[in-house]
Amino acid sequence: MLTKRIIPCLDVMNGRTVKGVNFVNLRDAGDAVELGARYARDGADELVFLDITATHEKRKTLTELVRNVAAAINIPFTVGGGIGAVEDVRALLESGADKVSVNSAAYKNPDLISRIAGEFGSQCLVLAVDVKYDGVQWEVFLNGGKQATGRKAQDWISEAVNRGAGEILLTSMNNDGTQSGFACSITREIAELVNVPVIASGGAGTMEHFLEVFSEGKADAALAAGIFHFNQIAIPALKNYLHSHNIAIRKL
Image (tube, rainbow, N blue to C red; front, top):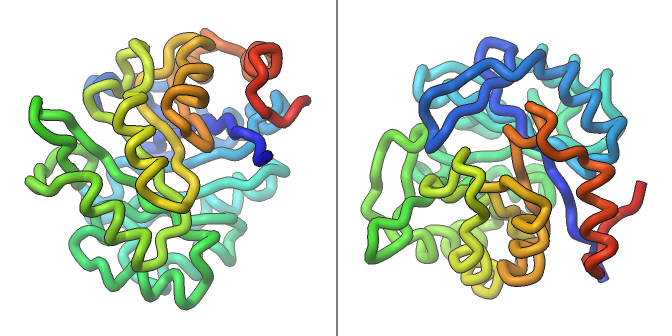
């Protein structure tokens, strides 16, 4: 049985880690490289670094940050934000990233998924999908949650996996930063829909929430930010809790 993964997410703006609620009201959470190194020491399985303003401000993710992170940690990490071409991916992987995450650019140009997967392999391509429930369907949003598409999340994710996406990072905008729990229903639906790993994101507040999203949501990994950044939950304690509830987890 594959072990479930705990993944701290570092939303980066100008080299600093920030955290908000429902994608707004950002506050500083510390130096991105220092936080990443701390999480690696604490037993995180992977890390995700997202330059949250790169797409919106039409900037490229800084390869310097990736080099600094690669030098400071010994666990796999994913980098996303502003990736719009195969050349962007090559620069990040050569700088030390293990995977890249694409979101808005892939939606606007789906062939980008096929090209990246063909050049580097699906295993290094994570499709990030920001979704919001409007009472009828889970809709895909772009550009850091600022642009509605009108498209059903399940349809876009199915297409992306068929094109070569090797992993899905599914973020519920309804739950993001609320600490009220993950969106287990849509997470499970996506996990049962596709044959690639699904990372649940948005809403973690307690250890029980992780247990729920692994057991009820069928997630392969769970991503969180604020509860780790502000020391509400320690990764070693979380792993011990999950292990005690028979969740397959990599022990410290």
